[in-house]
Image (cartoon, rainbow, N blue to C red; front, side):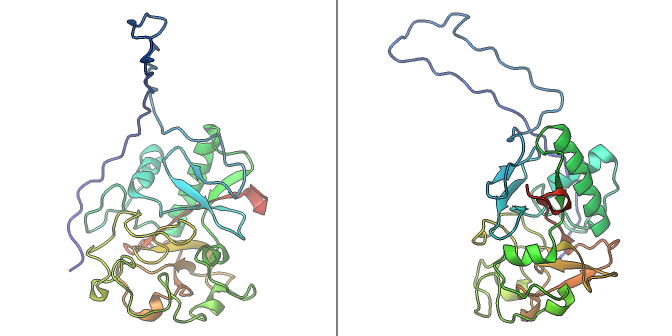
Length: 285
């Protein structure tokens, strides 16, 4: 079995540290009150310091939750370098009172949040956008959102045609995997089904447990499926998920071109999400 009971996940608290001054070795005199900096009082709700706001889609960024973002060439967004973590989603749930669904296996704070529907992910993005704008870490024209199917393909270096729906492109580029073109996957390729022997994790794994891709993005194959913004058929119905999960072993499910789908309200222990920072309405960052 790949499941074990889940204890309650604790919300991670982020603290700001004060920087100590170092006395010059050439002047060993005892410090005076004027020489000794005052220790700043900790704020009531401390967060990790971050740049004011991303200024362009070519520079890395870290937000107030410690979520990191990296540029992906040929896109106009900053990609989350890993899936939204349990600890990130827990802040959202605590502040908003949003209902969460416990997993049947143990997860740590840096595991990807799962049992999150597409609808839930949209609410998280709207909340995070408002939070970061109020903190001055996002401009009024910038938003957090799910990546589009096309952006996700570019983020794994997949050269696909620009026309057609995600469904049209499903598995059309064959035998190209996150690790290359060889089958079976090598040890350490990612968190996939135990039958492949790539890893020792029974269920989800902490984000960043395996090597990133060429753009610095982790788990673009394996661990959990990731919601995309699109409808599978481009019009209505199920939403696209990409990337495969710790439960997948079939070769065609691990293709970079593989699309699966779920209805927007579905909660699955195999599905999480990552977010991008984008200009609102398709505008530049």
